[in-house]
Length: 107
Image (cartoon, one colour):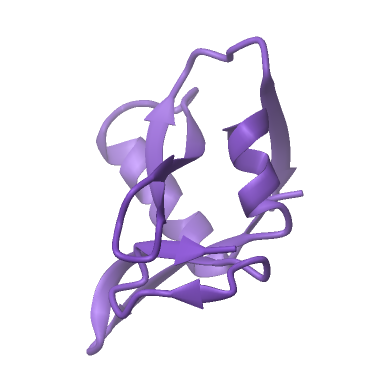
């Protein structure tokens, strides 16, 4: 399962409304790279692929491919707009190490 926090849900809804993309979903993928070895990628998409895993939490549709799901299983997508930075962040219980910026991780 993939999860979304209330603050991330609110921000996702704002972006979809602003960009006039009400039928789009959030696609989460993991790519090799970054200072810890793996990097998160998040996009808005409206096309499902054959190996996609689809989850709905708090009314938000989250999609990931099967390979990426192995790394992000039980991860929560959050959003922060505090003094320490603004943006989406992944709270991944599978990560054994993360970089200081929070954009890459290792398992």
